[in-house]
Structures are given as structure tokens and as C-alpha cells.
Amino acid sequence: MRGISKTFGTVRANEAVDLQVMPGEILGLLGENGAGKTTLMNILFGAYAPDAGEILVGGRPAAIRDSADALAAGIGMVHQHFHLAPRLSVLENLLIGIPGRAGRLDKDGALARLAGIADRYGLKLDPDLPVSALSIGEQQRLEIVKALFRGAKLLILDEPTAVLAPTEVDGLFAALRSMAGQGLGIIFISHKLNEVRALTHRCVVLRQGRVAGRVDEPATTTAAQMAELMCGHEIVPPAKGASTVGDVVLSLQKISTARHPGMALHDVSLAVRSGEIVGVAGVSGNGQRALADVVSGMLKPVAGEMTIAGRKVVAFTPNEVQALGLGRIPEDRMATGLVTNLPLADSMVLPRIGTAAFSEKGLLKPGAIRAFAEEQIKAFDIRCPGPFVRAGALSGGNLQKALLARELAFDPKVLIVAQPTRGLDIGAAHFIHEKFLGLRANGCGIVVISEDLEELLTLSDRVAVMYEGRIAGVLEAKEATVARLGMLMTGAEKAA
Image (cartoon, rainbow, N blue to C red; front, side, top):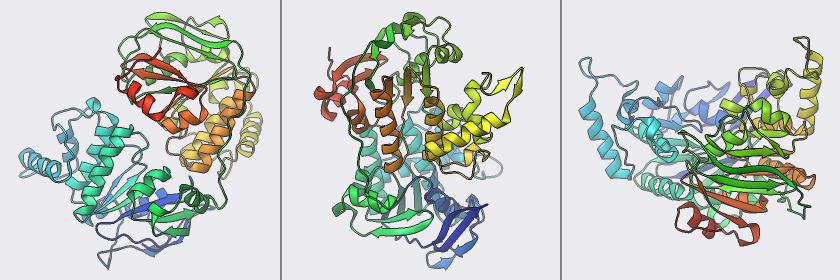
């Protein structure tokens, strides 16, 4: 890519960016949220047309006007949010968009190609399973197989480890090294700097749409040095100081639920006190989603009792738990956090749109809504053109800041957050962590559900581990290690 520039209105997403990838090379692409990484890759994959610059494939200029052109040029992309048809099988997902033979799907040919990819790269999948039955790691594997199935010689991976458990990350890295060893070029976008150091051969760092630096030897470059290149200044992790722990503000007693897509709960008991952070660890799909849904009033249990600030929850609706003092930051900020097609200001007041602060006698107060949004944008350094930008146009880190601003503005007694820094750069992650620790110091009780064990160890006063819909154990922070948590997460150990 030579001299690539792209502007959206007044926002310069990319400016004169040069980027080169060789066969057999794993190139790291780093930068803060909003630095222009995804825009640059969307240009390479044909989703956007550059305002200036050119793309060369194999040394020759390539006209990439859409994803079909990109695929024809041997470029495949695995997006951070998967593009799969959940009701169709693995094989059917592979065949989408591929012309058949004599008007019929070439299933036998597809099965043979799928088997060849499995043998060559170790990416095995059951062709008959519906996508809805696959784990997150298997869905990502299918996205990679889709690109290889279509003949990709260059593979773009946007935050590929954001949704994976540690063992799944190991499997992904083994497959990527195998691909590179057989001549594929790979562009690896990630905010997990230790993973970048372990996997990539070379890195390009973007800042505010421009190339801010290059790292020729990632393995011998520290994560702190990479972070400083990304952010333009030294990043200092927040310190977890002492906190005064008070009364129980959230209590779950023997909670069980009916069937749930992320595994049902069985006899779950957990207490959270004011002024403490309780982390929840577990391999994805072991009941964390059901736990978050129950606490958030999205799922009514079939047995058990829950109280917030000493008051019993009866209806288990979002309005009820919000009125009792609960704030919620959901796992999927795009689907269930903010309404991406609405202006940011509307999304930021939506849960409380019926309150006197924002409406009167059924009529909205546009001035109050705008003032609230502008105040939060400034307080949380949400980088956007203004309060009426479409929420979906914000980067992941700024979306997460908007969610946090919305919930913290109303002084929750309890805050439940799921995967709070998934896909965020190191600066945004530290900003979020500082806010949580500030809430903790002010007496809020916080539940942090995360698959990032380092994050949980950094923030938590206690860590509860979920396994097969149950609490396998609760460890005090001083007892919790990655190894100990890993044993509990896999059911190899139980703790009191």
C-alpha cells in the first residue's frame, strides 16, 4: 500500500500510509482505537475506496473496488465481528457466494478442499455442524478457513484473540505460524502487545492516521516501548490502592436458570460488597452470559433470590434493577449496548429517556439530551465529531467510553461489566481501569466478567471462577494466580 489517504467528513482516518507485507511474513499492525488500522484494512479489502494512493499485489497495481476484487487478488479478511450465517452449516457457510457447477452446489468439491485445508494447516471443522453450535474459537476458525477456501494468499486478522480463551489462542498461533511457514502473508491487528511480541516478525504503528513508527524486532522490543509508540507518551498502569469495604450491595443466593445460549446457571451464590471489585473468570460459555443477564434483569431465574442494596429483585427487568441502583455495561457494545444507527446523544440517554431529566409529558428535551452528551464526551475524552454523530461510526474504545459515561453519570450502587476492555488499546484499557478503581474507592460494588486473566488480577479484590454453570471457587486476590485460575476454569481443581 503506497500513500494511502482516506477522509470521512472532517476526520482524516488515514494520511499517506505506506505498508508492505512479504510472503511468509506475519506483520503486526498497531495503534490506538481510532488510529486508522481498520479503515486501512477495509481499503485493502475493498470496503472503502482510498482518496489517494495505490495498492500493489505481487508488484503490480491492483484495482480493488469491493471484496470480490480483493478475494480475486488473493486477499482475505477475518473481521473482529464475524460474518457468518448461524442457521447454516459449516459447509453451507463456505459455499455462500461461490458459483456452483451446472447450477448445483459443488458439495463434494467443497468437502475435499475443506479436508485439504484441515490437513495443511490443522484447521479442523465438522462440515455438517450448524454455526450456532460452534464455540467462539471454532467460529473464528471457520472465518479463517473461509478466506483460505477462497484462495487467500494474504490474510488480514482484526483483533483475532479478543474473544478467545488462552488455549484457543495457542491453537490459533500454531495455525498462523503454519500458514506463514507455507508462504502466506498475514497482517495481525491486536492490542495485546505481548501476543504481538510473541507472534509477529515486524510491526507498523499508526497514530492519528499516520505511520508513527516501525518495529523491526518485536520479540526484543518491550510492551512499554510499543505502547509509547502507539500513544505518543509513556503509559503508566493504574495502581489499585486500599478501599473501605462495606455492606453487601449485590447478593445472589442459589440462583438457577432455564436453558441459555451461554450455558444455564446451577445453584450460583455470590456476594459483592460496597468498595470491592469481584472478578468473574471462566472459559467462554461456562455461564458468564447467563450470570450477567440475571444480574442485569434480562433473565429471570427459575430458582434462587437476588438482592440489590438489600432490596429483593422480583420482576427481573432492566427497569427494576436500574431503579434499585444497578449500572450495566454489556459484553456486546454494538448489539446490546448502544443503538449504532442512532445519534450518539440518543444512545447515551436511551435507558433513562423516560425520566424527567430528558422528557416531559411524553416530549423529549433535545437541549438537555445534547447538554448531557456533550458533558460526557468532554469528561471521558470520547473522540468523535460531536454528540449527533452516528454511534456506530465510533471506534470500539470510544464506544466503550460512551457506555461507561452513560452508566457512571447516575452513580450506580452496583456496576456489572462484561469484557470491558475487549478489543481496546492499552491507553483506553488503562482509562477504563482507572474509572473502575475510582468507583471502588467511592463505595461502588463492581462485578467484572472477563476472559483476560491479567485484567482480573489487576483489578479484583476477589475472583470467582465459573465452570459448567457453577461457581467452581472464589479466591482472594493474594491467592489468585493465572495457573490457579486456569485449573479452576478447566474443572481440574475446586476451591472453597
